[in-house]
Image (cartoon, rainbow, N blue to C red; front, side):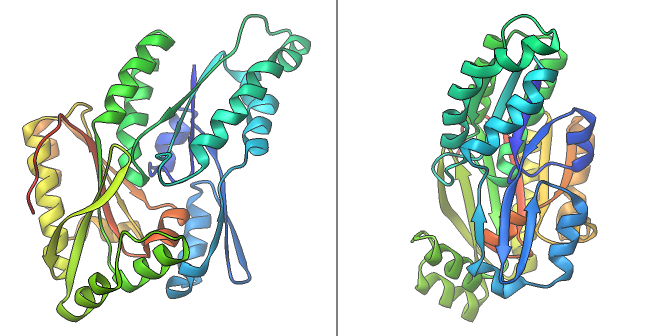
Length: 312
């Protein structure tokens, strides 16, 4: 069994390579610069070095198409695996999930034409799952999928468990630049961040804490000051670790030089909580797609936990 994800799911490149996880790329174009977002650290570094920053809100992104997914599977994955789970960003924020579902019909119809000449017998299974979150919020589902595959669970059992984890996955983000976030949201027709919020955020240095949960992305709190915001978010993450997680991993991502992430206020306490509780603390650079959509410098966390009330 194998896994495939889209490039917006924030996980370390080393983790993806270690577990042979295929990445469905997203094409990004900013002015005259083009990028293939496939979680390649070199490509992320090139994006950051070009300092496209404030101009990126007008970028064009092209999520992997139905044809791209078909090609990836029929040319490669059906020859390497017997069953592949595709985990994608929430369908409420991107067409990727729908594209993969559409592609799966052609893959399941035509895979024998590819496998039989290669001497591969038996059926091929393709299962598509909406993680119900986005960016690093999708990561706990993927980490759990790896564990289940390593435990030799059946495809039916894996699907059932991943659906439960997806329903209980949380992704939180502290954006650095509300004007950028609003400009990008306006371009995409997303009214979730209004002009008033952007103006207030700039004038009073008030930042929203945004949450992706069960397909919905909404502000769930606000904090004054960037550093205080980081400390508030990471302190909350440490509290969730100590309260107990459904998947023993706390995933973090940063929209910039990853070496800056451990220096943020509150990160040391989160690291200590993870060490005390036997929870893996992951660090990943935010995808190019993520930075284009929310701006550079965003801090994000992702975890899976039982439903709970939160106040910031």
